[in-house]
Image 1 (spheres, chains in turn brown, yellow):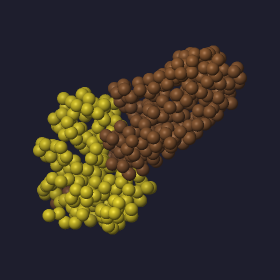
Image 2 (spheres, chains in turn green, blue):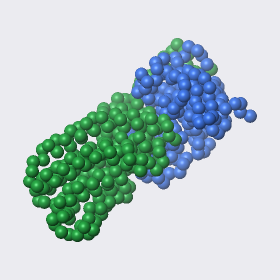
Image 3 (spheres, helix red, strand yellow):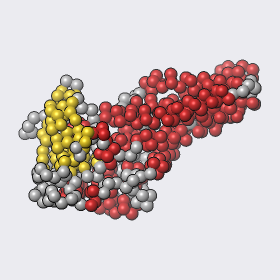
Length: 247
Length: 214
């Protein structure tokens, strides 16, 4: 037996635990990793953006370019399209990492999983949600959105898409081990996203009519605060279960 | 094995059903510092399931897991900070380079870990691939990238699922030496493999699942 004598302490290399990683460092690492991955596979995030543009710009063609009708439905159309584009892209939030085994490595890494998950969601939002927000004024123009509503459109989508990413992330984490879970994701998550849609498009409508929007925007912000604080825990839990259940 | 060596991981009364199949019934596993445990069995006998269940990565029907004498759910993060798990899936994202993959899996390595990674990859004869997309790597090369973590990441307990899959003989020898070295330092290794692997003169404990092997 060449193993070390039981009484002697293990060699220093093995007693010293892994170097501590600051939460922010961990966050920055995972965020950068996911951005790198997304940028290198351009297809995925361009899909989301193109879907958004196509859906919104088809409405004037289908309904007719009458400014009256279009400007009435513009907030709803832009918001529904943004919601659907987000749902479409959330499918892939954890799927690739699950497939190649990176996700189970994250689970057993000993690092706080909820921080990793927040970084992943924010990276996903940066490439999937933020471009939608930035492009929305252009689509507002296509939809004859009233001039007064642009600021609120940007603000409500900024808050709303972030909230949708976190809410949708719970769904994506729950279905991670399910093959072809896209439909399941929509069924699970869409009911939870309805309040975001109602208050988001409500805010834009009010702004277009020249009314105050602070109530709707505050509710949106409250939903965001709630989802940012609770969703990471739910996602981390769901991923642990998903990794243990799936292959 | 010496009974006085500190007990790292202990599983008591593990019972796992997969559908109507009873994979294991009341199985006890204790992993002590300085021990090598090989899980053997035919295909589908539950080797991977047991290996994953030991570190909470697979569901089990009955049983308890203890890390350094404490129940799993109390010390989960402590356990994970001290475990190095290499799964059936190597955890290599095709869109990242080997260096980026290793950095993602070992966040405790500093930003300037390139030289350290390069040195290990050189031993594994894949140093020239360090900045190429991993999608272009063969299965064996991906496995080598994953194995580089044995050298780069600390952890007293190594849990290795088929570490030799798609490796050539040089790869075998490298893994064997790493395991020998790790155990010599007082670490422990639990692994599954189909290949005959000898660690002479070290003792290897076997767990055989699904009846006797012929």
